[in-house]
Image 1 (cartoon, rainbow, N blue to C red):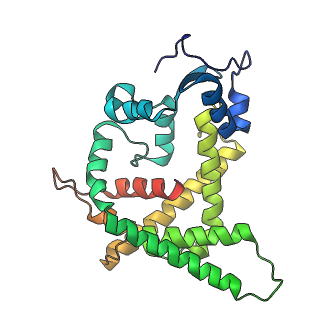
Image 2 (image 1 turned 60 degrees about the vertical axis):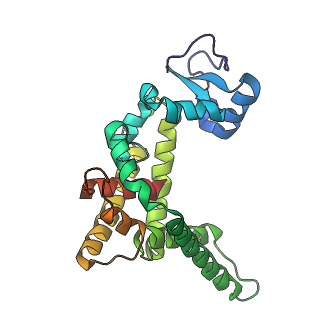
Length: 260
């Protein structure tokens, strides 16, 4: 959406606008935008001007009622090349096809089943903590990382990924930091520039790809259907055409769920 001088917003610095605030305190900045300037504001990030909407009616108009005329922000196209064409980043006919294909998977009983898996994982972890000797120390960051991958592994792949938690947890932190930086910083170095940050992101991509490829191959070879997200994606069919997803689309969807 083109910015207009009639839309209120912070002045920011002459060269970078509100880029510094977006990098250092993004949540506080967003709250201040609405509190000080209203439900429709504009904010400058270096050379870009962004329109920020807050009211639910405006969000519904942009994302649902008139989505075809608004499109996605420019940075989404860049992120799509990194994360792939999962439902979160795809658009147009592909987004509609994927939404149509995947929507039936997320019915009430399936979500309730995932909730039970999550509850069981938390209960096991808490039980293990209670069994520790009085005064025992815990690395809570490591514990929560292992709990997260226990849940992710069982809901997405019906596999215990806790053994991979250290490597995958670090890779996800790298990916999230890299993605977050590029949503607010139009001047961040593109991935092909071999900075230390970009090399870490490339390594994270390779780890994700290898993990997902291995798990998809194991599932296809086993012909099992444990009712997890992977089996749902493998079984999903477009209700209009009957077509399923190819391996690349399944990879993109799993990658999106893994880092979301």
